[in-house]
Image 1 (tube, rainbow, N blue to C red):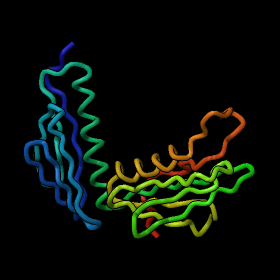
Image 2 (image 1 turned 180 degrees about the horizontal axis):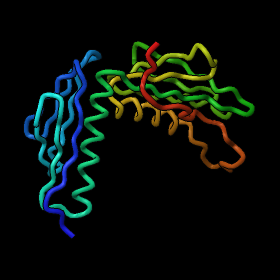
Image 3 (image 1 turned 120 degrees about the vertical axis):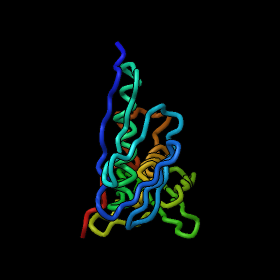
Image 4 (image 1 turned 90 degrees about the horizontal axis):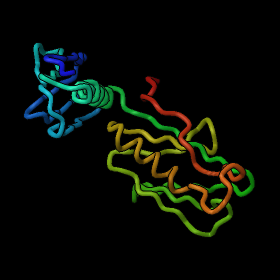
Amino acid sequence: MKHIYKDDIVTVPEGVQVQIKARQIRVTGPRGTLSRDLRHIQVDLQRPSKTQIRVVVWQGGRKHVACIRTVCSHITNLINGVTKGFEYRVACVHAHFPINVTILAEENAVEVRNFLGEKFVRKVQLYDGVKIEQSKARKEELILTGNDVDAVSQSAASIQQATRVRRKDIRKFLDGVYVSHKGVIDAE
């Protein structure tokens, strides 16, 4: 069944500027600027007022109408990124061999050593705009922060994927670096 008209509205908070041109969105806020290209999704982006963005689909089927919420979520993530920022925490879990994680600040990378007692050094390159630091509360926890949720989450996932257990029973060998928390940066 086709829907003739469906829309949803995203509210823009104070102190955030949003520019839309040909489904390319540029959001500027106190933490910086983020942009996103949504030209592959066929929706109308309208500005009924300075504090609202309307996402509209005309003559859409079920999957086309589902794109409305996707675009709204992308815009909300851009707004949250430039106002609050995103934080992912990854925890090092080991049973016998302690995992040694080294932060290479000048290369924007992480080295994982002694995973399951292996001599192989795993080096994970972080995405641009992602900062990593050792947690002060927990010894074996890393905190990844940044404005772009895609870059922060993909950096955390790359670290987790680098320490996958292979050729062993994963029910028994639970060692690895796992994402333990994800959300926005707490206002301290």
